[in-house]
Amino acid sequence: MPEQISIWASLDERGLGLVVEAERTLGADVVLVYGSAEARPDSATRVGLRPAPLDATQLECLQGLEQMLGGVAVAYQRA
Image 1 (tube, helix red, strand yellow):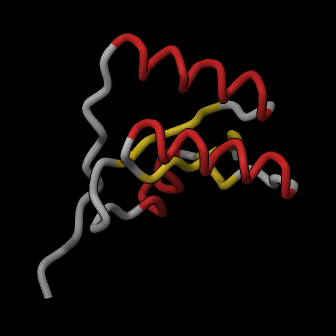
Image 2: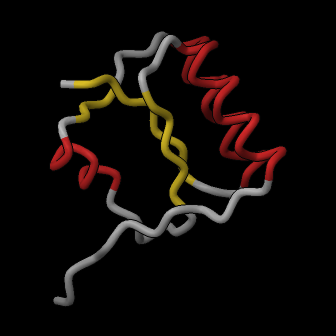
């Protein structure tokens, strides 16, 4: 099986602004948006990031971001 790689979403200025706003809203150190269903969000752990603990309301915010940007969004904390 070929190795899957993370593919970053291609974001315009509006999309980047939404990601920065999500980071502040969620209290996350980093929000990454992957542009492919084949993306492997676990690859971020290799650079010292771990998924941020989010409550139900925060997860809804992240899901809304995914819908607006057409990708998979993951909130991270520095490990």
